[in-house]
Length: 292
Image 1 (cartoon, one colour):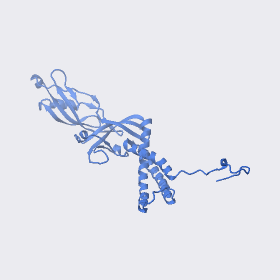
Image 2 (cartoon, helix red, strand yellow):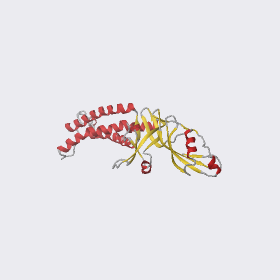
Image 3 (cartoon, one colour):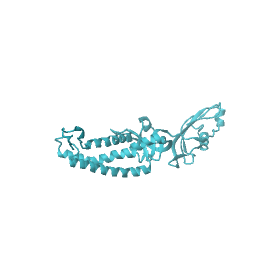
Image 4 (tube, rainbow, N blue to C red):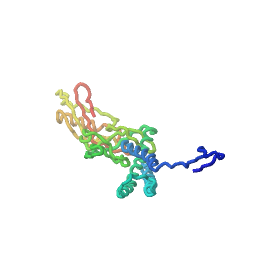
């Protein structure tokens, strides 16, 4: 502090200068930590799939920042700049210092790899959709959802599953192909909605009405289960239900063999689409009607 005399008439308060007071360490910690925690929470809430590059570099950047900030916090504790509540046992101080690195790494990683890029992608990404195969899972979890859809497509995401409902997860079959919708850019894919993937029919062939059934005035239906191979061809066809049995089965199966679907594309590769269903109704007045 500098004090000067004002022409012998005393001390001039205007001439008193006080060195700038440094903000306490706690203020710096809060200023940095609150946004990180907020972005980390958003990273858990958002269904964001980081790109391979983001997943690679975010881990390394997180490690670097965590090391720097951990030593900074440790230095603040050791030097006494970080205020600790009076009477705190040394054991508690030691445990707090041990917990700093893993907690800091996890929250910073959530913010850098999930929360921040998810927000950026949501507002700057382009509308995008992609199909992926998911496995239905049911397990009791106190903190996450019990009914889940898991996939290799979500390998880099956290959590690496989508939450679903009880009816869908417990229903057959045990896997499903979903059409994922959202926004995408170089950072990754922010999933905002998903629904079952329904293949587009490229060629539809009506079945021949069996002459014997037509002569007797018999009507009915055939429900078939089948897979669609990578070329869009129905395979593994079998009769799931029919009324009456054995009357229209052959005609329905022969017609379905000639149908063609748009192939399922997953990660740029054509894949088999399992567990499809088709119901063909045979009516004398008009053509057979198909219901997927």
